[in-house]
Image (tube, rainbow, N blue to C red; front, side, top):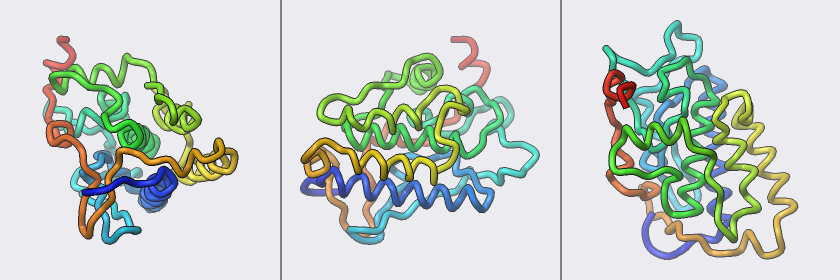
Length: 212
């Protein structure tokens, strides 16, 4: 996304459409497992497209842990606590990742930052859900409902999140959805931008992570 600024309503609408795409994938039994800004592209000014299902998994598969010979594979900046802990994951893990994306779209930085991926991963497990700054605090219930540390405390489905989003927008503070954000407008085929270091898929040694 390059050049200019978006109104908050436009950003929220684009994020809603991404959530609908994720919900559709879940309805087909597919967990993405690597949701992040770099995997959201725009076909045009209005149409976000979810890409890179390279590490996606069928929900009915016998093994839904994301480990390979002692390695944890994914993008720690956007991974759920259960994915980081190599536990079984379902669609709610994707919802957690969407929460990290929503936070970054609003604030301009990922929710947890550190000098190495191991520390970032640990922060997802041990740190509280981040608080949105003013003037976005009225959207905090959405971030909290997506990024709850326990999966059973999150929205159950992407559709449930979209319903909660619509209800919250209906009661938004006057003028709130018209304010500008730091998110830049998209050009054809552009991605939602973020720092390259936080976008890279990472293989983390489970032994090294547990030794911290």
